[in-house]
Length: 464
Image (cartoon, rainbow, N blue to C red; front, side, top):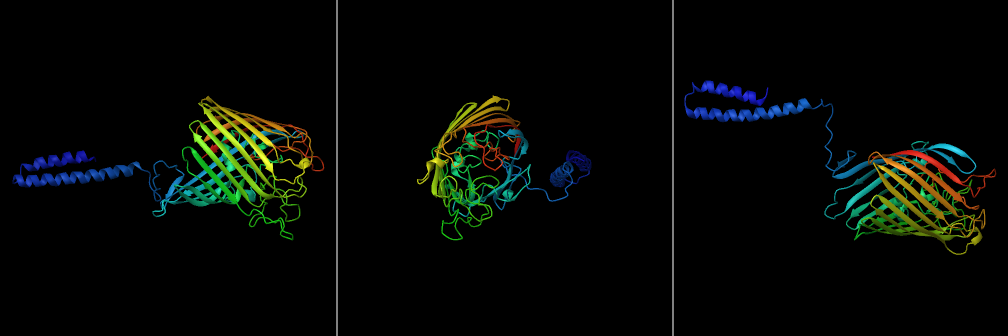
């Protein structure tokens, strides 16, 4: 029964009984008591209506989401904790010049948790942490997909920026990552950019463990990212510890697990091809409206090479400049990159010093559809351990369409073609694609250079 009905009934009762009331003071007292009763009954009816409209509770109700937070974010003891993830799977037809293969790749799929504490006292500092893991959706997971296999760290954040310990993509890698519209697909620019020596060796597009890194705040459009990764391998001392693994690691420094790069010799505990001692990386970025520009540099100290140096240990480094400009619904990007090596190397076997170029364009066609295109070029190197001074330049072309259903979901179609000189042996999908398409091998396991490699891929992405 509604409060208004009760009130009318009480009023009528009061009116009927008032004819027999003794005096006006008693009538006034009864009116005040009636008003109090009406307010109490109205409050009780509101509670009954709310309970009736809600489902029967079987457990404690969940805490209300903080305005502006994702449903996957919660506050724990004043700290913000967020669960996030990204899934990217594709089906493709590929050819390495000798064989044609159909495959399904999980690409850049991951799951992570990040947290930021409330202010620590009156210091202005906050504690920050992140644990991010590769998710091998279409394949069988190995130790590569262990907890914290991707960018994971613990650090502090304040007005001066963020200071962290752990492992992360280097500033050199992050500097131009947004310029590659085909990231983690068969058209990934790491087929050439950041790639030393061909194959899958994107050694200057890496995630480095055991690192100290810093991200500055933006100041008049400028920002700085810096990283130092110490002790990635022991000194080259005579005896059993020579070339030993970095302490606590099961792969050599400079290695990409499940791919190529620095690997130990078969049957021994050596890290003598691509392993380095210390690494440093820095990027200076500028963002202002439609313009983004970056200059970055990275160096690996005391790099061991068995094939292309004749046993010489040298410092290897890379530098690049990248620019992006948004022309309304069109985004154009360009990168120039150069690889260096210290002296003492026979030029005829040196395939790790060269120039590289990259151009990409993304055009919004409307209704959520993007047209994407890119070109990457690797110039001739001084030489090669397998092909000496044979022509080893390469050109990669990628073309694609991507349809965005919303901010979380998209589908894409990508085609890529890699044309190479007689001595070149690069690979499509070298930068995070689930199954890369590398140069073929002969019956003795030797690389066959100069092959035209191509792939057609259709895939789907979902982020939360």
